[in-house]
Length: 50
Image 1 (cartoon, one colour):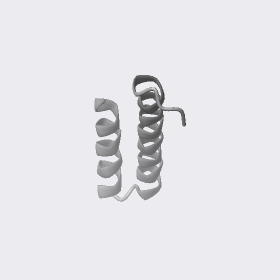
Image 2 (cartoon, rainbow, N blue to C red):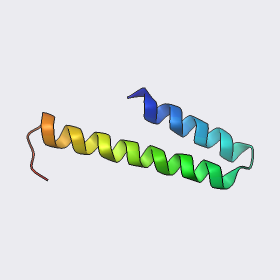
Image 3 (tube, rainbow, N blue to C red):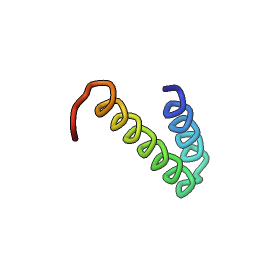
Image 4 (spheres, rainbow, N blue to C red):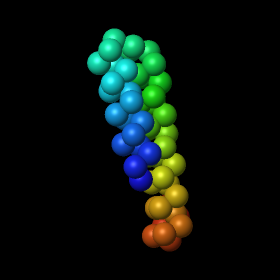
């Protein structure tokens, strides 16, 4: 679970140094990681059919 925190930190550092487009790409990757992670846990561990 530390991967989303690492990617969001990298994205925020990029935005801080005014690399806005690269920061938004990294933050979009973070959202993708979190959505895949939550979908995996919601379907396999909780036995909920989405």
